Length: 332
Image (spheres, rainbow, N blue to C red):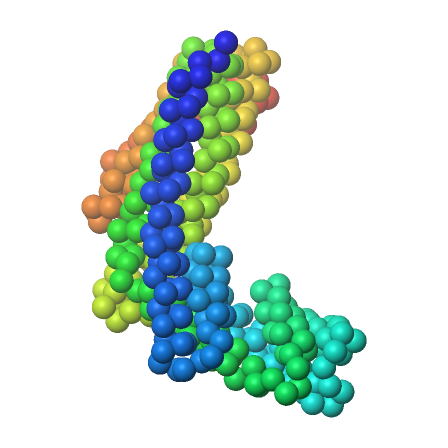
């Protein structure tokens, strides 16, 4: 029987980790919604300020790391919807048929200008809003555009107080530790010729794809903060290193996952396992962990480089000792 308590604790830890990572997003969304409502209703005297907090929440929660683009898409969609809606309604009036025509034309125009899905959604929803109001009702085009500006602007301002480098450190550290730990687990399974343990390491490594994507999102969000806030410009250098590392991390993750998959295959096929092969995989995991520590300290990765060369050397010895098909791919 599978123990219930360990599984429950694992689920609780994973849920807590997700909450810890995204709790700041929830706080930002709540703060941005309240501020956007206040600015639209009290400062701009907008009689219908509902869209301002909705735009703020959509900008923060739906596009971590792409909030500048999200704000531009929001505004672009609203403007397209306003232009088409105002023009058509002034010519043929409002009603169900007119609303359908306005929405179709607004989305078509968004497609013509190569707008994304978000632009098309905003263009269509704005066109619906304008197409369903009574002709005698107040003009909603200007308030809708103002609300989009307020919501997007407030969302960007709320994100600025974050320390960008600290955010990335918190996301990248656990991800890379998990990455290196599963490589170590795969090496141990290889040395013990335990296909089940190797399969478990592969499953955990595949699940780590979520954490890797979250790290990439965090790098994007931090980059936006340094671009918009003069107080964070001095953080640009370490963030540029993280940006560069994020692209390589994706490749390293993909290839390492495939390597562990081949570890499972060679164990299940009963291929030879020279002593140097698990040592090579272990050294590889060590080099990744050491590289991150050197990265945080801002020093040259001399020790990590030594471990990486040891991994390559051990892989060469394993090939010389004789490997099967999957073993050769692991060494490669």
